Amino acid sequence: MSSISIINPIFSCFASTTTKTTNRTTAASFATRVVSLQSFITISSSHHHRRRHRLFSTATTNMGEVTDSSMDAVQKKLMFEDECILVDENDNVVGHDSKYNCHLMEKIEAENLLHRAFSVFLFNTKYELLLQQRSATKVTFPLVWTNTCCSHPLYRDSELIQENYLGVRNAAQRKLLDELGIPAEDVPVDEFIPLGRILYKAPSDGKWGEHELDYLLFIVRDVKYDPNPDEVADAKYVNREQLKEILRKADAGEDGLKLSPWFRLVVDNFLFKWWDHVEQKTLDKVADMKTIHKLT
Image (tube, rainbow, N blue to C red; front, side):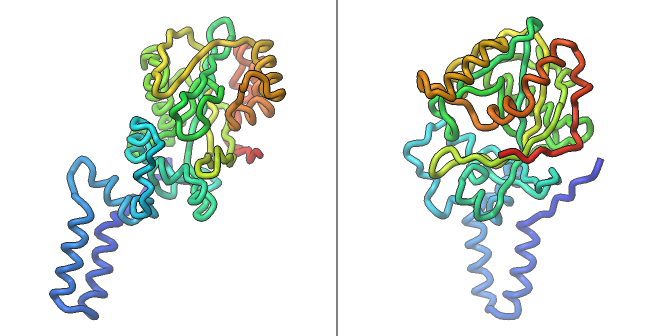
């Protein structure tokens, strides 16, 4: 497993600034800079890593975006507290940034921000797929129907583990509890089967969107779920024919039914073929984690 080198951006920048300031400014001017830096950041042991990153990332807090009056309080909290894993198109970790920044289309386009994500497809032992409808308060793609759970591993040790895709599996287990109330013991991390990775970009509206390198995780378990209304408006199991009817309605624009773009890409390219292997218990035959499928 390749190691991840973490550079301390605060003290690197501080050292650089000190060198230049010594040559070009007075001691009083330098002291003013230090006071200004200290007033901008409150360094504490619990938030040191997150804060030092945000100071020198292209954070949007200076542009007044924090005051989004239309954003739900729970979603706003997640937008600024969650740190997504930034990757290149080969899925190499290149940094991290706030969930807020990672979903701003302006930044996605200007800085080519690409973050790691996962999509869980949970089947019961009748081989029905659990779908969810995203809550009305979601910032991106509210009220659309999608696969069981879609989210991001965070920039933390337990979710950066590359070996056996354990970081992504840990994140999937965490979010199934957060969104659907499914206890961790009902979805053991070693039961998630990574089948592939897709890379896609999809605007949600004029401001928000997705640009993700998405891990597709399949799991077959009988579980009880209790949706979190801050995350999920509805959830239900469907068989193949019921899903085909949902697709028909979405294509026809009936009942205002919409699907998430990532779910539709998986449906159109992989899902029904993989469903055969779910039933035959042969998912290992179609797993391909070497290829990153760029889908549009």
